[in-house]
Image 1 (cartoon, one colour):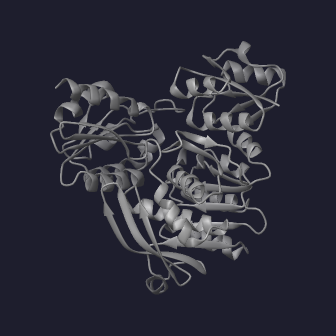
Image 2 (image 1 turned 180 degrees about the vertical axis):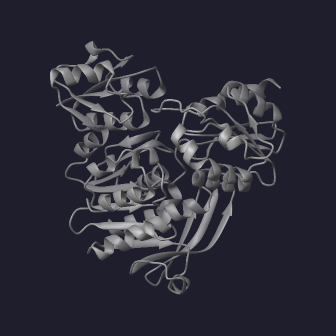
Length: 462
């Protein structure tokens, strides 16, 4: 078959392209601009155009799009006019995973990191899984791999409900905290859709949920009541959970005695009468939770629990998830994809540990007008963990500007923060303010990651 991917250079699309090609399909596509992903795909022999033009689209190709591709796109328009088959990226990914033990990792936060943990740990355990992760997995230099085993790991995106296109054997849900309300409308619809996703699990399959998250716990309980098989994990001991009336499944992994340090986290995990030592090369309580969920996936796939716990040591992070970018004269720079209040809070808690008593300076680019409007108060509360925050203009992505919705909705609630709409100027400002011992964090799901090089160049000239 022939596939033409519109926006092929994007994180998600480039993964699909590589996986389809690895299965012997003919793959080509286009993107708005040159990028490292575009060059990587060309290096694999794919024809990739820069710019969208109707003449690029092969007549016999199935056209693959994401939600971000508008109907006005000339390549999509000509495909519609010709009557060519048009499918969503998630449907193409499902085709790539056909006939495999499909592990889908879902949740409002933590999908990429947890998928990367599974890819690394299962590889270290000797399974050689295939995987499709929305970020570069450290040690693999890619977010996609077609392995020799029958295991396929995929990051399942809830933002546009495309995760409903999957039929996994195992679904791991890290949390069900409302987001993307521009698409869902209400928090209840968000939760209802996750239950619909759980209903897609194949007969005899398994749902794994984090019981620390109220939404995920409700999902687990509801799915269990429908007759589904559920395992859970979390930091609350069973005795305390019984007192509080919190749900947990019969098979439950409990995290105890956690310890955190720079680029490290460790804990004991209690699972069915066994004590398992988990030691990670990444920091943060959220990553201990992610790792415990990954551990349970490994056990369900047949890896011994102690071997899976040991294999998790191999994980060293994914691109843009508290990624180290460089240092100069005692000043250190990290980059993070956090674009939701809970993600911001988790990243800043980790930053405070990594800073070892130094200041934490943040350069933040809000992502989406709708998210900024819906969660401005929660963002402001999370940013109180930083010593100084610079806000740039909102990265609208698929959305058009909304009157009255600007970064000031957050900035005005954060004491001492600075609103510098132009992100280049904001990057230079935060670079100049940084002193030896400070940690600077570029943060957001948009183009803010490009400012890392601006900051490092500024430091190198001082």
